[in-house]
Length: 551
Image 1 (cartoon, rainbow, N blue to C red):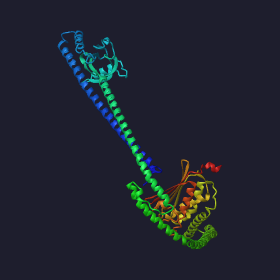
Image 2: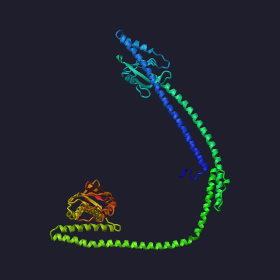
Image 3: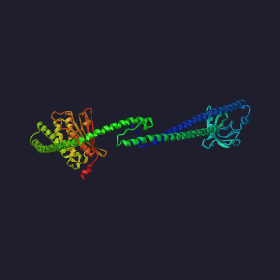
Image 4: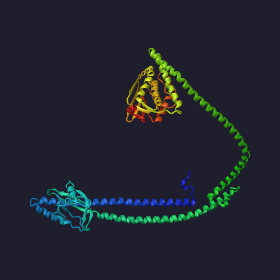
């Protein structure tokens, strides 16, 4: 298998392309390593962040609950001895002096459930203010959320942005809050998270510097390797070019005279192996040329003999072709004349049957004769259509589909009656169609004829015509079963008839129906199962209202 990528390429260009591919793969490998380093650091940083927050949560929960126990202790001991205002003032004063950290953390803040600041050692100017609806820069209602979580059984945490005393800037903070329900107090404490973020940022910068240096070293190494490889390629190409030039000069000489290449003139071992096969090839070429010379001596004679044979064969083929064309024309004329000759006696038979029925009473023998004559008439119409369809255009006309269908059912009534098949019709009165009358008759007649032939004895045949949306639907229902519905429209395909007095026919009727439907874009559906067969035809083109017929 050849690689099209190397087509029309020089050896030097292939070597350079190989070096570039290697360079890209090494660079890709280095990129993957750097990405993995960043990914590992991100996961490590995330773990450090989570562990830091978890540790700080435990600390602030411990501090807050310790203060809560102090308040509960003071309340239990003095609430019956001192007034509520005095006791609250002493407790708030004691709590404000519990913690005095320089970074502004570790203090306990206390708010009423209504949002009033009761104690805030860092922002004492807010004491007495109601901060219930205060929001931070991210839209978090800090005090409201702290009051809400404080009323849970175990308290709760809230993350928000808060002014850090040491920087006088908003920093991310997480606080824990719980409540002292007898006085409806929310108390809590928190810790700022910017220090861990700063630590992670510094580590990220250090890692980035390290990876940048690593990438630079990789690039420098690749450049050096590429330069060394390129020099090696140039040297190898020079040697290869010399060897190839030797072969080129040899082949130029060998094209006009049979000379052999000397192994001593070739330096590379791989090319030396080729010399043996090339010299063998020269011997083979010489032998072939000798054979060609001998063949050329007798070629003209053989060409003359073959020319004579071909002329004789062409003459015979022309004669056979002429005979075949005459035979086809004769067969065509025979069919045309036969159809024409059948029409006259058939018309006489049907006319005399009608006259006989007018003069005398009907009997079963006349009925069978009439049925047989009408079946012959149907076959005649099929053959006539087959002969003319490729040479004759069947003009379309405006038809009352309803009346036309009823007339064809009347025509087949005697045939169906003779085979004990009542024909039931459900035909809408306002069905109109712009269609060829002869081609529509072929569709209707062949379906009625097949239904009579193949339906179970004494079973009814149902013919339906109705509108569905903008289409006309023609259906033929019969008590029969088709073994292979996919083949019934093939030429000369026939199912076994169930009627003793009817022949199977030529198997052309449904082929004619299929060709007309295909030409006029009539959709066909055939369903046959459980001894019930449906032929369904959907006419979409040329469908009109009854008013159009009247007009």
